[in-house]
Image (cartoon, rainbow, N blue to C red):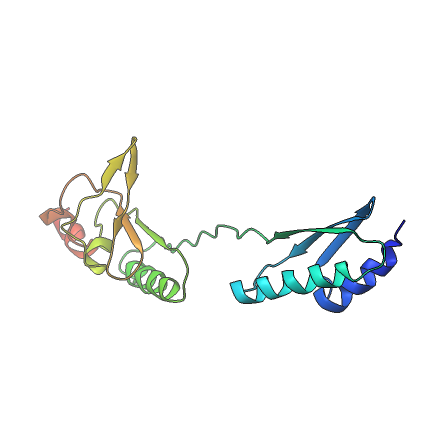
Length: 169
């Protein structure tokens, strides 16, 4: 029977706290957290863990499972009780910046009186499609997807910006 403290010591040297292990009948089962590592670093860490465990006396086989922390969905809302303060511009620039930094971004324009996001994102004439009764956002040139609340009809004279809407009333 192999002492698990020998295996734990060997894993601490190579995995620096990223690995947990248990031993049953000479078989080492090791779980390695590879969160934040690129493919090359993941492969190197797995090889190092496998080699370190194999060198421990009494270990006849090694099983390694790689896990990573799941990324959480983050929702950002840009809102104001006053019109004409730049909410659409701020949210469009924020979406573009996040998309350029590698994030998956979707932008929803929920302003039913003056949807301007499609115009800011360069897709004012594009219509979203439905697949399996689910509305699919329109891809933009800025690497983020966009959907407007009033997407079923094209912008009219009354829905082309908050300033014009206020004058029409």
